[in-house]
Amino acid sequence: MIELFVQGKPVAKGSMMVLPGVNYPVPQNSTALRAWERAIRTGIRSATKGAIPGPVVVGLDFHLFRPASRRPAPGSADIFKRWPVPDAYPDVDKLTRAVLDGLKGLAFSDDRKVILLIAGKQYSEPTGCVIKIWGLGEIWTDPSSLHTWLERRIEGV
Image 1 (spheres, rainbow, N blue to C red):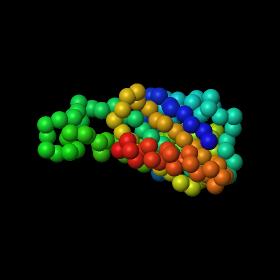
Image 2: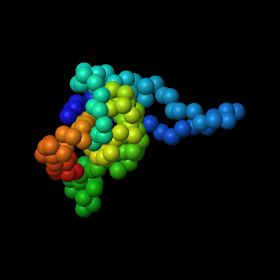
Image 3: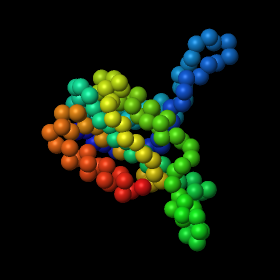
């Protein structure tokens, strides 16, 4: 199992763009996205000696900065205003895409090796992403670490 926390501002990786005058899709290439993927690659290099062979299960827990518009309102009758959840931008699937692309070739050979992906986001500081990667063999022989992680993730929601 690989486990690490990559500190920084999680950046969503959007869809391919079609630019005027260009007849093919172009990947998103922002400075913030490149910095985030670089932080992921740096973190995974220090956390592992090489890619996990075969199928993998990936758990991602994104910690996002809470904007002023999402501050708790303790007296509100609306439960989501009392305890705001990050049900706004950035989309969890776009956050996941950036992390998986950053891990590709370092934690696993290709993101098609990911057979189960569990991802969530919450308001928390420091900002960043908790990354856990299990080889399928590890889960078959000892599923307790995945179960424990899932239970903690569900309790945190």
